[in-house]
Amino acid sequence: MPYVNVKITREGATAAQKAEIIAGVTDLLVRVLDKDPATTFVLIDEVDLEDWGVGGVPTREYRRRNRARG
Image (cartoon, rainbow, N blue to C red; front, side, top):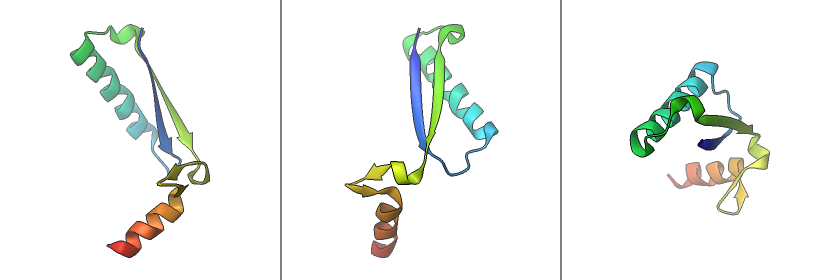
């Protein structure tokens, strides 16, 4: 009974996009591990940008710095 928790930043992912993620993750577990899709659980958590950090800084700052570089 696989349980997969996908965390994404809260930036407007649509219901259709989330459904595609759920289907894709489920399909991956079926193909690779021969898991039963009926007992495969996928949970998507959306996290506010101010609650997500990359490289030691909040996401917005990380993105700002990377835009300035390139």
